[in-house]
Length: 109
Image 1 (cartoon, rainbow, N blue to C red):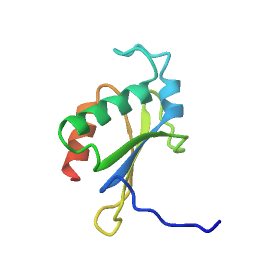
Image 2: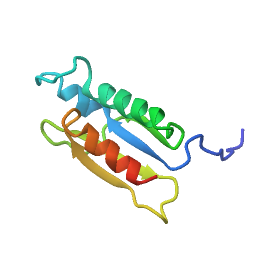
Image 3: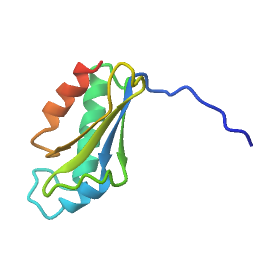
Image 4: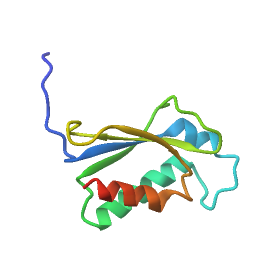
């Protein structure tokens, strides 16, 4: 079988959320129950979709991003066109920083 390049269904970029970090926060007292990474993903996907940007940025959980900070979740934005924007990796609090993360993603569109 040959390798065939495919057009991505998302137009601008992909946002990765470290699932391992989310699991490590399970012992903290968070406002929402469940996995912190999953909750952040659901929030961002819902907000982007509600604003009409659901197909612009793909939000997914990933494996370890090798940026491990206590009481934080590693996230990374990877643009489709790296000549226009650069890839970034950050650490965030999955509940306290979610609106700031959304605002940052919206600025990229």
